Image (cartoon, rainbow, N blue to C red):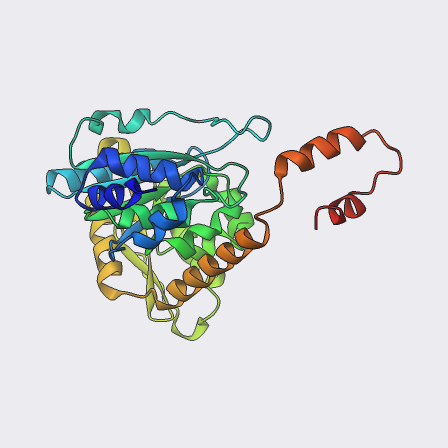
Length: 320
């Protein structure tokens, strides 16, 4: 497509309409999507991931952080991941209501993406789309995951900083999250800290961090100060626990200061290697599966589903 170079140039100049069109081309693998990705001049824009269980206040925290950054005249890009119906691939949570106050701000770009069946809390095309966003002139990028729980750990490979948002009444859930969310956080945010159990839960969280980040037990340390507390040193990386009431804008400034500290420290080399390896693996997988038609698979299964001797493994071999 001759218009692809023009589109890339426009989005790199800050044209939000061109950016939106480019994301659509990449997300839906339209004609020219590969050329578009190859033409991108990708900048090293900080990408902050926000994840955590449903109802923890991820959108409220994101809204408060956006308000803070826009007041500082930063340009902010947001990718908000919505869960998808497994039956019609439509979005189940298309609302960005908490961010509505910023919709007309010219320094903010928000794009909602559907997971389209991806199990990791992110969209299948998230790596490519974040690269498209990084070609635009933003100061900071945010990715908010769907909030499906432990399986969201892939955000750690994508983001420069990963924020895990929890609430005081999620104490029982923390034990089940230790193999997932508890290990990926750079910053823990205990939101809704005006809850009566907030202090108790915060102390409990600080106590279990050394066990959930077990790779470096010698250097673990505890500090029970109130606010932006550094609870754990892990492989030269510090894990923060911060209390907030996001809807009242309490503690948000402390969260942002910790984000800046982590960005300045730059402990991302190992994750970046993993991310690039993941990108290459997905490119190879896509090329290997290029001639496999999912719709044809669906039609074949529909035709044979009632057979008593149906064997999915034998059926799958027909498409290999």
